[in-house]
Image 1 (cartoon, rainbow, N blue to C red):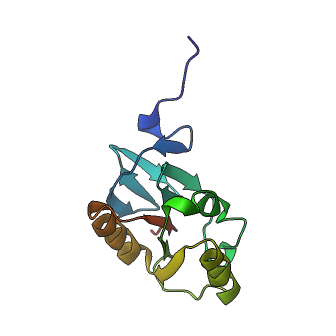
Image 2: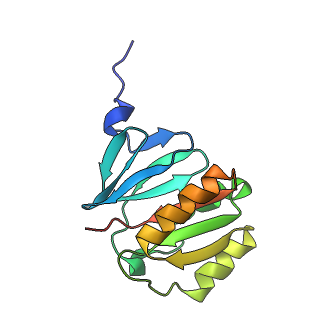
Length: 132
């Protein structure tokens, strides 16, 4: 049997399943008993590393994983860091075409809101930029 990366270390950049966010800050997040330095996408199929580090980098390419799972997502929460940043209205329209609503807020507020909506078994996803 071939060696596989340990999900406890998030080495593969993907952890299957729905998970709540235990903590955030110091440049990363804790979830599912592990920690990750950097931004993350919390999707219906699992948590994936996200290479976005600033709000202006959020575009269609950055959100392709959300598009791919749109059937299981009614609302995308976008955490833009310590401050709320404007998102291109065309991006909002693009997501709406796939049936996905968009709510933009600070990363901390997005993480807390995500946890509440997951606990309610809502069809939610989150795109969260890591904060210091």
